[in-house]
Length: 109
Length: 116
Image (cartoon, rainbow over all chains, first blue to last red; front, side, top):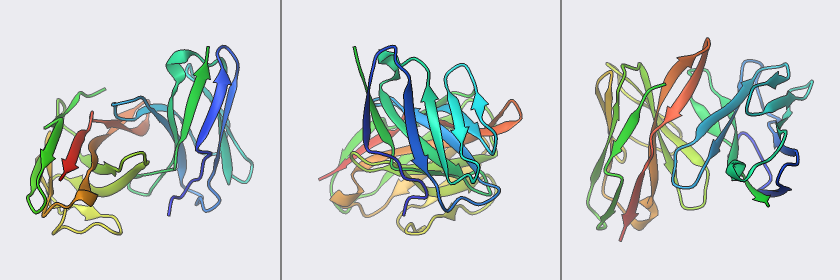
């Protein structure tokens, strides 16, 4: 069973913000939350990660719930190049990754 | 970051045969991982491969079916043995890589396997 659950698909208009949710109710105190995205015919690539506090980088923001049982990846202005499958991942004790079900993001011009 | 390559990029195989997938990294890395991505699905971790020790397999995956070698710090192989059509998937290797004080993973491009 996946350790994280995500909506199968979402749509966004170009230039608008996108909020991608993830539930990880069984997260342990030491599990980091990572987000990766996968473009067609490519391996996943890093987007952002966090533990407890909200995080920002040049690609996105990560909002983590106070109880850490859910998180939200925020793309501030979606572009056509952001169309991909976004995975919410919990990192295990020896740095192994357990991928969620993934959300396929469609960006509408 | 490191550059990761996989061979073959794709293959079509007959039922009952075996295929060995190679993963080559242009830098020395301690930990490598192998994943399976079934059609239209997410990635599932098969095993963790450290150089100099036996691979650690996740639940549902066994060494007889997916033997892994890790002969040095830049190379690993995954063999898919006695294949059936259910083994048709993309197989990806990844490496543990430290950037900015955090451990991330970089992924290879994947090997697309079709079993007839």
